[in-house]
Amino acid sequence: MSKVIEIENLSKVYDLGLVGTGTLSKDLNRAWAKLRGKPDPYATLVELNDRTQKSSSNMVYALKDINFSVNQGEVLGIIGKNGAGKSTLLKILSQITSPSIGSIKMKGRVASLLEVGTGMHPEMTARQNIYLNGSLMGMRRHEITSRLDEIIDFAGIEKYLDTPTKRFSSGMTVRLGFAIAAFLEPEILIVDEVLAVGDVEFQKKAIGKMKDVSKGEGRTVLFVSHNMISIKKLCSSAIVLENGMVKFIGTTEFAINNYINDNSRKQEITLFKRNDRTYSGFAKFKDLLINNNEPYSNFSKKLNFRIEIISNRKINNVQIALTICSLSEDRICCIDSKSQGININLKEGSNLINISCSGIRLLPSKYSIMAWMGEQSHTLDLVENAKHFKVEANDFYNSGNLLTIEKHGYFYTEPAAWKVQ
Image (cartoon, rainbow, N blue to C red; front, side, top):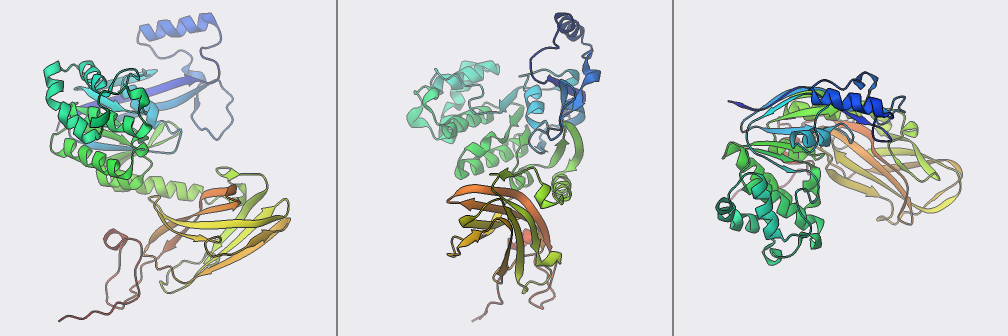
């Protein structure tokens, strides 16, 4: 199978703060190097793109030493944390920006959907934008016209076809943008997280269409998303980016496991010291224990939580919610004090809260807890992936068969009564 994208030693350098090197002579040296196809002469002063660390330089690698290739008809997922370099990579492939170092070889027309409104002229109508985008892709007017009805039907905007797109909602704009990108038959389709703006129905349609264009029509798709379920359903392989560098390339399943397990290890930092949280400054989760840190291996066992909260003042009527999530970031169920009519008052200093649940029947897998605390719906503290725990395999029904998430969802039930007539 032929390669349609080949990337070698790709790096992208950005200036922090003011644009430019700071002096005219250095700016001219950089421009002259770029014209000759030479590396940026000031790239040696560049730091890695770790947004959590204070910078000692005024330049940063948004991408560094990227090497990979994509075959025709392949659907490649690109995953990583915010700031990992995903959007920068797609912008370079879409020729919105150029690399500082390295080379890119691409075969065929490229259609991109990177941000809401990408490629749309707000003063033009939806119909005019369809023809504009088609023309930019090198298509003739009759070719665009032959696909016009399909684009309109898929986007579901027939009533607003002759309305300027500046009056569209973000969801309608994404619908139109994706329909244009998918139906004007590019050889390479690039889609960023922007699909999350659309409603659930449209997201399903879009993922289905991307499957069709790759498998049925042999076109290549690059797909960025934080939704691991969408990545798993759509992509045959994936790349994990971290701090602007490729951390892993391989099958989708192994890539997702690499990304999730790495995040799990990083989140084992003491909860109180975690900086990736939404914190009001008044009350803070200090610790969270699940079953005293024992494996939740017995399906019939109660799930016990022990929460320690540090508050710098008395706070009455506090609401606490613990949401159990899959490692694909699905929210499975929530234990919420307000919904049960539980009134929690915090005293100044340390507060211990114990919660016991017996009705949760989870299938074998790894799970995480999102911890939220609020006062009159205002957030006091929010920590995603506050704690991870594992449900181990167990033959609960004594049938000799183990239940799995892949086949049975996330929950199991008490033994059901079966009667065959």
